[in-house]
Length: 319
Image 1: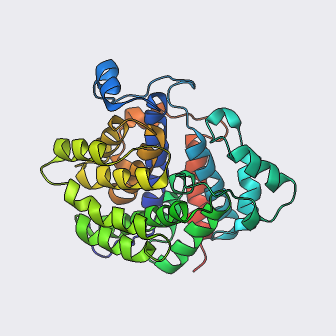
Image 2: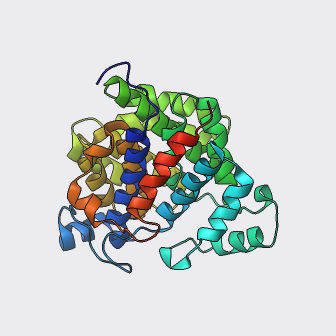
């Protein structure tokens, strides 16, 4: 790739959105399973499987990402008041939302201010949906961090949720820049930089990010085993964002990144959605297997609609 290729472009925004949807849909049927059970029942998961939803369906992760893209289209940037309303408008409980989110949606619908609706959850809900913001503001970390924190605080106000939402967004922005420049990510440089950016929000999150690169030596299989050993890979942001980042660093392609993420077990849809957003921002939309993209849900608010949102968001972006 040319060094002159802009980090912000449709190919990378669409790549991040498509990667999040692919990871979400691939991981959803495996949610809650252990790595051993996934291996025993499915081996390497490389195709969309049915679960509580039909094969290729997205969950709350992608549904809330879609609301963010709609917000970017309407405002050329993030506008949190209208985003809160969009979260409530898009809310479909059968997509697998966390138990406390219904209360957030009720407060939004009753007119409570967007910055007073959230819970003190340390969950990964603010990070799972934020990758498209990283691909929208890759060259403006200050605007990106602000947008990431605002969208997170609509639903999650715990410092760990906020810190890891910011880290995921900033990491996706860096993935855009590195991919555009044709450079290989250096895990130590990236993770130490992310740790510095979030240490004032939560010190423990910063420490966990700084420790991640030491787990990634020896190739993908050793890295996978180390990630399973080190992290809960569950709904806690501090246990979900680092392994998603680890899969991005250890994976040698967009496909391998997401396949590794779903193999970790636990909150598979969210970890794979975050890993997919990172890989899509780095490798671009064309990196995703056609079999995956063609299998994605494609109703009124499905794959093609998301592509149209990405096109409109690019056109709407404020300079």
